[in-house]
Structures are given as structure tokens and as C-alpha cells.
Image 1 (cartoon, helix red, strand yellow):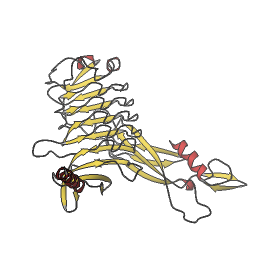
Image 2: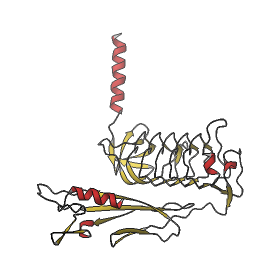
Image 3: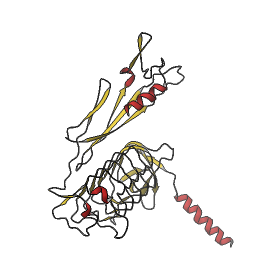
Image 4: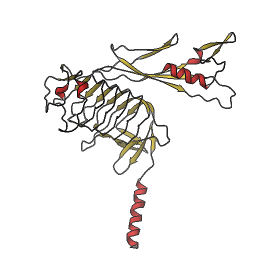
Length: 347
């Protein structure tokens, strides 16, 4: 009995020795597995999550070693304040790619655009569930399988581009995406789905949508593709990227422009916190950071552009005959209440 207890403790100590706390590499945290030279991107253990543009690459360098990023972990970015996601993985010697785990990006309310590049093979259940502002999704050529409910209840989703190897899409993957207008299938065969299960799309909604596919594409089975209101053949499966937008501020208005015609913009305004240690007063509102991404059906989304504006220099309110910079709510004070009002106006 004592021998068994000793062996159990020895095994437990060995597991504990192999387990590592998350380490920060670049902008993100990872757990690394030395035995397999792999790493899993995990949630920020410091709290507060991640924000802005997310770019994930297939490998990381840590401690003088190279690790292949095997997974984006469960709830890694869930509910965080991110605007755009670009993911590029790396296939291992057995052809396995990066996998996007359940709820990895679910409930990201500011997320507007997702581009999944090469080296990613699975998008698992609920991966992008209920990303209310998500408008454009590009699925890369190494992805083979989109699991159940992966993009369910993305209510603003209008355009989906499916890469050449997507062969299976599970039930409810795009259910609740009532704004969906265009689906592009780049492969020679349209993906299949499990018969008798819940549908991939809302059939009532895709009656007004267009399916784009190569002229040579075959229908492995009819549903759900026959439910689309319109079929258009694609002359080319090479996709163009939206031009990088510009941001300007003039006469109290922030505006965007893009050389690619017919784009839509998704933007976010953040208040930039600045330190005024031991100060009896500080300028509020201070600086705002404006971020924007451009997207268009059938195009890859643009890069995210960010620009800061020192808005108190633009805002003046008359106070006892003089204009006091930053008194947005006209209460005779310049404080955090002005910050809240101006943020709400800009959003």
C-alpha cells in the first residue's frame, strides 16, 4: 500500500513539474509543452483580457526554443474588447494545424472582422458564438471542419468566405445570422453537413442571400445550398484586400475614407487613460483613440488603423464669458463626467 502511495505521489510530482504557469510572449499568454514543443494561447491571467487588433502566428519563441501554437484555448478571448482577428497557424509533420477551441472568441461584442489564414484546421463549437458586431468572416484553405454553433447568433454577419478545403460544416454553425447576404465557397466541392440535424443556416433568411461558387463546383448534397435565393459562379477565387482606411477629424466630426469603393467601416472609440499623480486637477476628457477596419463582401478586410485625438483642444464651452477646454456637460467643471459624455457621443 505504501509503495502504491509513493508511486502515486511520484507521478503527481512529475505532472506538477511538467505543468507550467502561463508565460507572456509578445501581446499574449501561452502555456508551453516542452515534450511536444507546442504552446496553447490562453486567457490573460492578469485579468482584463485583450483588446484592439489580434494577430496570432503559427509559432512563438520562448526560452531560446521555438514552439508551434497548437491551440487557441478555451475562452482565451471570450468577452474581450477586440476589433479584428487574424490567425495563421502552422501544420505539423502529421498535417495537424492550429485549432480554435470552444468559446475562444465568443461574446466579443466589438469584434468586426475575422480572417483565418493557413495552418488552421478546426473551428470548434461556439468558437465565435454571439459576436454581435461581427460582419465579415474569411475561413482559410487549410480549415476542413467548422463545428456546431461556431458562428451562431452573430447577428450582424453579412459575408462569409469558405476556403478550398472546408468539407464539413456542422448543424447551427451559422444559425441566427439573419443579416447574411453572401457566402463564397472556394472549393471544388461544396461542404457537406449531417443529415437530419438542425440546419447550418436560417433557411428563411438565406432565401434572400447569394451563394458564390466556382463554375466547376459540385453539390455533394443539395441542402443547404439549394436554399439560397441566388447562385453566382465565380470567375476567380483570388481575393483582393480592402485598402487601408484613413481617419480624419474636422469640425467636431470623426470620419473615415477608403480607396476601395463600396466598403463598410467598423470603428471603436477608447478613452486613453493618462496618469496625473498627486494632481489636484486634471484635463478630462483627455485623449481618445479611434480604431477602424474596412470590409466588403468578397474582399479580405483591411488592416486596423488607429489614431489618437487630444479632444480637449477641440472642445470648448462658454463659462462665465470665457471658454474652458473640455467642459462638455456645461457644469462649469472639467472632470471625469465630461469624459463619459463625450465617449457616449462619439460612440
